[in-house]
Image (cartoon, rainbow, N blue to C red; front, side, top):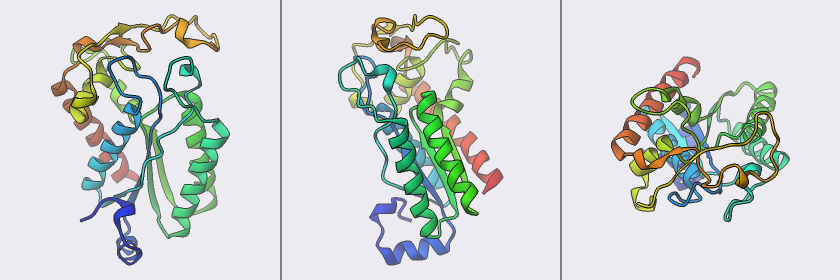
Amino acid sequence: MTQMFDELSFETLGARVADDPVVFLPIGATEEHGRHLPLGSDTFQAVDMCNALAQRVNGLVLPPLAYGVSTSLRDFPGTISISHQALNTIVREILSELVRNEIRKIVVVSGHGAQVHMSAIKSACEEISDASDVRIIALCDYDVAYRLRGKQGIPAADGHGGMIETSRMLAVRPLLVSDDRPSGQDTTPDFFIARHRKRYMTEGIIGDSTKATAALGQQINLYIVEELVKAIRAVM
């Protein structure tokens, strides 16, 4: 069965809505991920997670939103950051339109996990949930992936563009991953609101991407899907 929302005709969509599908909204970002990963890494991962989930839970996948709040990485070329207000507004309006189309089950999966970014998404979801009877789950897939830090040989301090993220990208978009893989760390002082993060993340990543493998990425992605299927079935 067709999974992509925008590939359906209005008549086909009407029939699918009657079947009470779970509709997935993938949200990513356009931002630096080190010299070895593409700017669209967060979007690619979110789309792939939504596609895999839709196959398991009678789902439809919306076109992705490929921009997010990425203020801390704006010193790096290629990062395109939108405001908290802009992200909140567009997510709220998309969800509102889904409700108007009689969608009652929605899962928002963000591949980008910055706190301000997720705050914009979750507050939009809360507003729609409060105003309707729709059931909404909203998360960053790294909320699940980072449960594996400190396990399976993954360092506890792994982060943005590091071993986990590079492995996941090797599993889903290997041709976009460079063999020139750095290691890096974030030396931003505790609690400091840094305007120029590049001076504290010179490589643009947190972790050692040289240790990434496609096999590990496949294991991580499967773990995320299995955990999210449980979460979806628990409330939907």
